[in-house]
Length: 621
Image 1 (cartoon, rainbow, N blue to C red):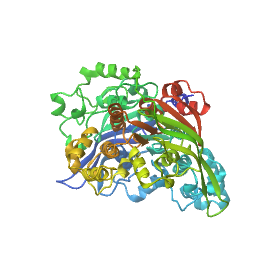
Image 2: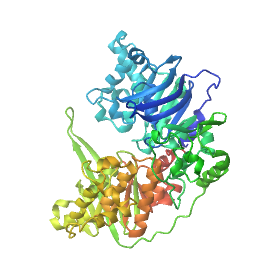
Image 3: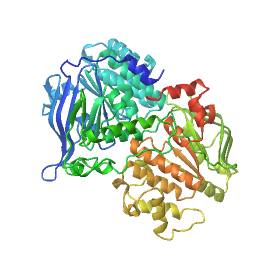
Image 4: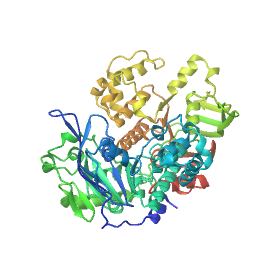
């Protein structure tokens, strides 16, 4: 059963006539003082009733997290919220810290994206949950223990997890523990801020279904903050699409999915790479999001909108009601509504996958690669974990191969072994005919040749670049290390690299802090291409990006491959990326290859139960 099917079947409509549990009216968030005060969020209105799930969706910088943190009074220092936030009849804006402390945790709870930010590494799981229990000072130790075990069971964890520390459990288990701690106070409203972004697809599905089932069972209100529309459509009753600090569209989730009523909502939907079919062109939203206070007298989306005209740049569109529970901030909606619907329906039409010319020579060959990690804990016996158990596959010149699997399947160990950062216990890794499993056996010249042969694009563009080096300096440093290349002749080659990845030459003088996430990833790709590699290893290259930036980067990688016949290895948990970017796919489970073949065959006609489980776990897939 698909995740969306299982969640939809559990959904029960709330009473639309009941008074709202949470009423946010004309919320604004500002930074600084006049005359230099900046507006970050403007005119956000939100009504949430008991048992309802509301999604807040948008790109980074849209104001999603600031809106959710305003509700619980946890804005960063220097920011101020204005307007009205009433929770169960109590006004929270301007309330004393004593009132807010009585609401946080007990009545409203916050679940963050990274459970490591919520869990103290020096405290056991039991301690985290016990600290959040109501009236714990009136309970005996045994009663608290029983309650902790009960709370763990509610999120699908066994009693033995209670005595473990956060670093001793997986990412999915940490998120379940964080959820148990967030629910320990029995809140009426849970705000989940990107709770599954860092998780693999099956763990994401498990956490989302768990979250939804608990919410329905308790009749708890839920606000889900996410940049992933597929997740929002799978879980939420209502969706609020935010752009540049304001709500661009709000609607019941099913209505928005069927018929978007704002060009930005449509742009987000089109930018999501489909998992069900290949598309010839990934539809990224052009440009970048402006700051909220730069669009006071115009439509903030005008510069990125293909339907924009003069009226869109001279007046700011209000969020107007267009139907039951629906609102849109588009001045031209009456004129372009039919075009929006036509383009939305085009998403469902599959494009034929173009033929890719793949050479006969193998650039990478893995044969029977085995790697076991041995750890000695402070207490207990030494542990052995088999990360790779006889893994083998190959990549031909010009071919793109995907490696997919859950966290702990061995994907990262494969990448590190290919890059020479980990030495397998046994097996063979040949790069362009050179045995490279143990780099220590190679000469200095051979190692230098392999470093040029294989380059990598990492997951996090914010950690990939030195914040103190300009873009030009980062590229110049790589060019100077290219074997046989010598120092770069000047700025021309740097400019050519930037143009190759779709960035202006002027970006050479910028620091990483002045770039968006997508722009930083483009610079990281340019840096990898500067070595003129034959194999580009992409380790979750778009996992940390918004959907529009993701589409831009994936489209860029497609273009580079077409123009240079570069071989690529995509390591990812995102099956939509695999569909759009690879010719063949390798499915890993617990260190073993359980299925391998053409991407279309694997995704459309999976033979292994684990592959079917991965595909069924895709939200809305």
